[in-house]
Length: 313
Length: 95
Ligand SMILES: [Fe+2]
Ligand SMILES: [Fe+2]
Image (cartoon, rainbow over all chains, first blue to last red; front, side):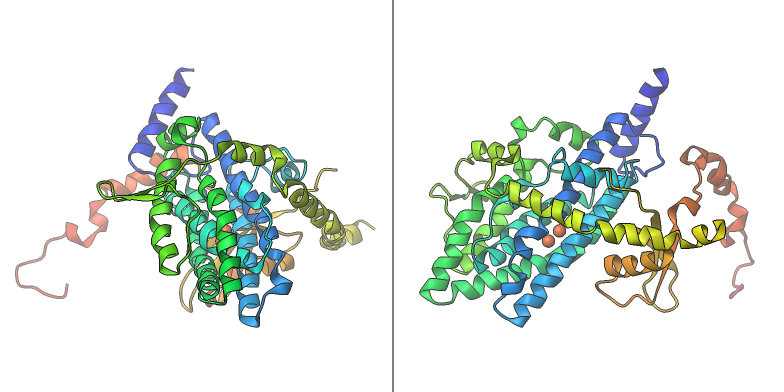
């Protein structure tokens, strides 16, 4: 007991002085537990996040767009794998994490439970959803847990292209025909609020935030990150003539912030609890991909064990 | 049904000719050949790495963080291992 108290204060000192915690270092059980939860949710989000965009790969309007989208979706698979590895350093197995996603006991970002109805959605996802993810992941690249920080650093290096290719699609459509303009505006109308929800509940309603910030896992609060995202995004919308669907949006000269209207948290919790437009479809797609890949895993395992089997015979 | 475990491999990349191999991350694979292919897909989508090593993670033996003091601290007080410890007469150059 006394040891735990001493260890814990030594641990907090290391964090306060900016040291990184590495897998074999002493850490409080709750730190380990919270990190496994957070990193695995992040990993699952990258994996499920491939589905809404993957939906459009075969229907991309040109070869250039198709190459970009394929490369982006492939990057997201990579992000999932970096993150699963980071979670595994805390003593969980990859297979257990995947099983938790498939049996529905693990969460992933609720943004991916919305449908991609038109090609414009692909552009708007790159611009807003990857844009919000970049804000979050740039902070996480400075996280106090070494493997998580390094995974996010690697991710950040790849994300800028995701946002830029998305914004290029948005800008092209916004400068296009009346039909194209209304298509991209419609996509922004549908994705704007869910993108703001990606940063999570308000600081007062986010029980984990204070603890995660004290441990240096997070460096900025949900509301702080959300405000930063809005501030950088509004000028981009204006530059291409996109209207942000928020009548209360206004610039505060004093703070330099774009103030925005109330977020519909009922919708947020409804989607998190599994009742969003595509929750069931996403889980079905993940489960059947996993089942369809079973023979590959079995064949690979059998091939790898062939020498042992031959030696025993 | 529980998904069966697949071995973990640590991946090391040599990012340019003449540079050392550095740890990049890890992959799961049933054998070394698949580990190399997975490492290529996961860690070399950009840039021009020249070589990849994969090592079974269970073969990596790491020092215990609790031993860091006894292992590494003694180096702190051996200033005589550095050139600044030694003095030479004024005006002598290129020693
Ligand atoms: Fe990503
Ligand atoms: Fe991305």
